[in-house]
Length: 342
Image (cartoon, rainbow, N blue to C red; front, side, top):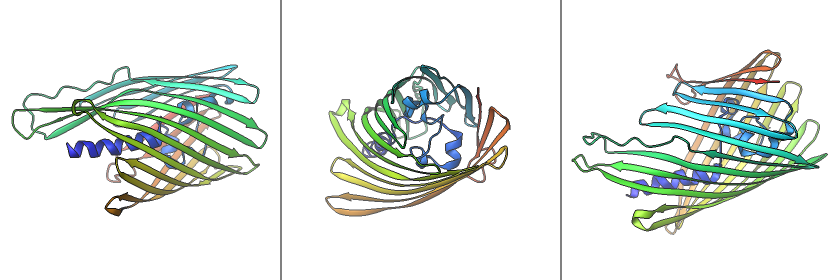
């Protein structure tokens, strides 16, 4: 039970800190710690739905990887912007098919948007009676919703977003005998976010603050853990010609029970587009601490490098590719994307 609760805390804090997220092969190549610092039409489609109405024309595309994950999406923009996506996957003991919808409109200097994702098919497969494993877990999304507003001025933009979601966690465990134990708990979250962008010709600055609150509830045990996460971030982005360079600083403080988890992240990325080819390189470093009544504990240092490649063979078509950087020996590890804007 202790292991299950510890795992639940980690997953819950991740949900509170990240909110609603989408696949984006471009952001895979630059690094997801930059997702709020730079604009991405796919990653922002549901996380910042108010931005959809600011992008002209139509956008259709699909993203996939070798694990059986598929993410088709489409967006049309006019006086009313409509975007729809689908997250589908089949692998192991789980199957998923989660549709999403986003709507946006513009009223003077305000852009208003709302998005929601629903768990249409996302059910656990019951384990066999004769099992040889010790435990298995499954997360079932109930749904996530976002409401956002952008206020535009000539040299500044202000985004205010509120997101909320819930998912259920299932766990089966055994001691090797014939009995199978079942655990279930639910995780809920509510996260308001404020993002300010100072716009300049080549160098722009962003500052982000978010506060996530929620909890993990074990109904069968009448046990509840409250979680809170305060996140501060920001940094400059330089864009000139075919070069985009961005760097940032992110600080997160998360509480669960009587403990606090602190982490500091330093992400950076470069996107260079010489002609029809796009090269992407991203990296981040993270240092974490944990504090409790017993004192402070150093959790460790993590660093990661990501790379990506893009290609625009014709004017409106973009192809993106990202290899598996976590396992260089996995030559079949890849993510692909194709997008058409018109």
